[in-house]
Length: 339
Picture (cartoon, one colour):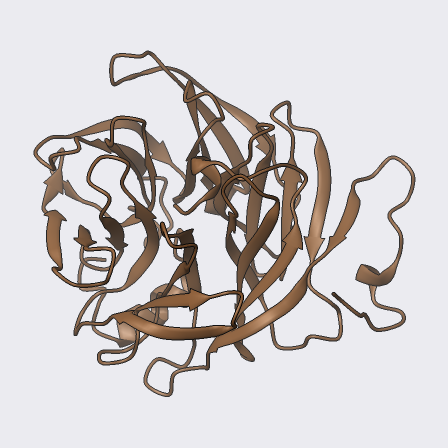
């Protein structure tokens, strides 16, 4: 999640963390109307459950990083949860129940994903420039990576794993200052070496491999664009270009997921919606929450059931933090399960 938006940055600063830096609609709402000919279709999402309420200590709640574990439970992080409150949550989407998986005194976790190498759950701590890992049951917390990369501290946002378990991290460095100092950083699966693959990005946020692991899709929050990094097969980048310009209006590009048909799911921070594109940049659909569901401002991320099309997106706002579900256009794969 983010690629933290300015509002979230302010909240984290207040926490002392930024020293480093369905359905149903209401008549008349634009989301109720059929899309005109030649535009994308609307996919209606429906509410599954509320997971969190606005925290008195931080003034908000912000859900992110949905990812399925091996037992089919959904793991979600609450970026702005204060010390002692659940920061990582395990959800049984069938029973509509949840429980705390992990909490601590300092972390501001913006993403979650399981490693294909060691099976542990990896979290990005945006505020402290770290990547930490947990055992699948939430125990055994470890600092996987910490420190500067090429002389600068990271603000790690989202994670993508390659097939060997190496990490590719979106670094939102420069967001608080409003400068394009964002990066994509590759960290070896043992945590020992970190390499900058791309820099001078506008608040790097979402990151996901394409369906064939040939390149990376990244979103740049403050430019509302999706860029594509073609990899060279040797741990570096062969080329980079702007792939999609997102017409977000007041909303900004958040996290990204990719399905089995190579479609991109682009979360929007500042609007309770998600946009779906094909790999050629054609806008296929907009996933909307019902207009009657008030107090929701952002769809940060999505996880599509591995091998199925049931998708769960994290939605937050003054009304609280929720899970919403919809039927995705194609099946879920690793690239649509967290980040």
